[in-house]
Length: 385
Image 1 (cartoon, rainbow, N blue to C red):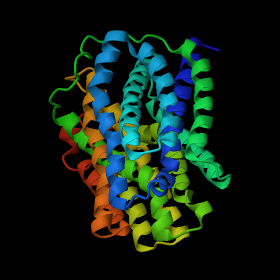
Image 2 (image 1 turned 45 degrees about the horizontal axis):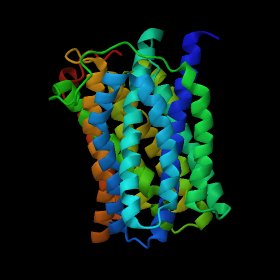
Image 3 (image 1 turned 180 degrees about the vertical axis):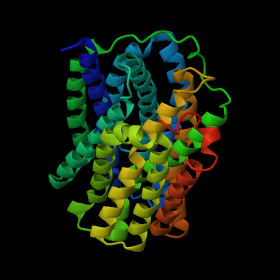
Image 4 (image 1 turned 30 degrees about the vertical axis):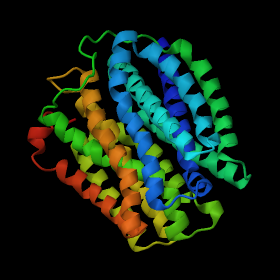
């Protein structure tokens, strides 16, 4: 097997591990809510702390990857990240859970930036677009994590025990992959806080990814709650909408590169926004288990391309290196993770969950509009790629 192929497999397995840990947390959010007897508004406030940690991790990731290289950051960060997960499940009080979630979010984003830095470097060496396939593995792990979560709920195992099992799986993956993760080419522009003013291209791509990440974060954190409280499904089927969303997102990301090559990145992003709007609208207007599941599946297909194509477009910026551009877009997009999930809770407290999801559906229209309006200015050289 060629060295680049081995590196790709190893890097893909680490994307899988990252998605497995995150989806395992998300799959048990309804149980966390029940454990601490939280209202929707209180849960929204609690969920705020994980993306806060993600935002705090952005400048740390830029500095650490520049100083030590993404390889060292990945190897150390992955072990710590996997060990923090069980602390979420075993936290006995909210005041303990909050800093654990902040740390979990911080480490998750450090891993996100360092893994994508590795992926962009490998993409350059291979000479063709492969970034979406890595994000597909992350999403497939989310599907697997949701399935494992459903099994753990069926077996009536606590989140803490569930997360210990996931940690064991994660450590096996890390031990097998570590020797194939290499030091990427030095990027002298990637240091410091990596936060600069974005140009028009990165600003437009950043807003699109912001809306995509907001939708993605809401689906991660609130799909189970929506099926439990709005659809009012059987407890064993609470994760069905989440599984449909994650499964569709995983599948969509594995075909994103080929479809974008045929129809252009801009066209795929535009159509993805329309899918997001239709999917969420179906779940709100027809809150039955069959239609809502299909709607959430459409949302997964829509969300699938947003982040991989946004990163790919950003990496072609003529004003910034790929690592700087990635950090800038990530900074903007993670505000979506910061605002989306708690916003759902606050609106649900004022109105209801259906109203919250209806408002998130508008994100899809925003993405479609931004990918259409003056695309020749904000997406140079993307109409034929």
